[in-house]
Image 1: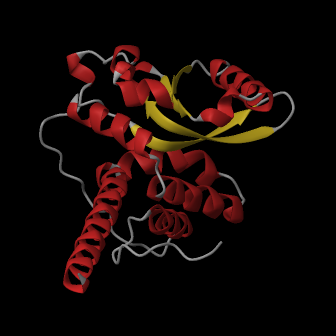
Image 2: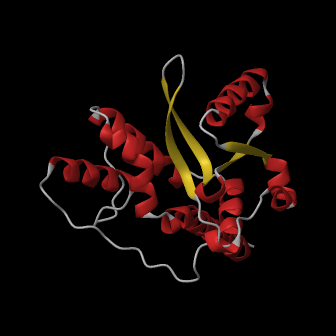
Length: 212
């Protein structure tokens, strides 16, 4: 009896380890497909500002949001990747509104067709969530970017694929991609870009960014 229980316990432990490894691999998927070139373009407005702390905060948040992507976000990311869609996960935006400058992070941004894809959990159905989403969508509308909101249930059922338009062939990702690493420099702007790259996870040691 004891031998049977020990065997079952070991199997359970192995299963838990396998599940944990799969979750980690899935979350690393978004990190692996992220493009340094695209990320630096998205960070340009923050690099140009004379506010290094905000720049560091934004870059670190992009990294953190990608590392803790939800299962639904990973499913959609894999679908976009398989369809060869060029997209930026957790893309940072600085939008000038009549009230103030606002910073947003978009789940997925497809530059070719000026489209955002937001994967919405249950909190988005609450009154405060609906109001926040309306204000956010209005801000993106003001800069010519459309938002598609996909509830988690639609992702789980597979119906989300019908909601996502695929750009024309000329805007799709080539079958083979080569990412180029930029060199280091002592110029002030280059140092700022280097900080951003490290915080986004593109550092040479691929370490998790330190606190900011």
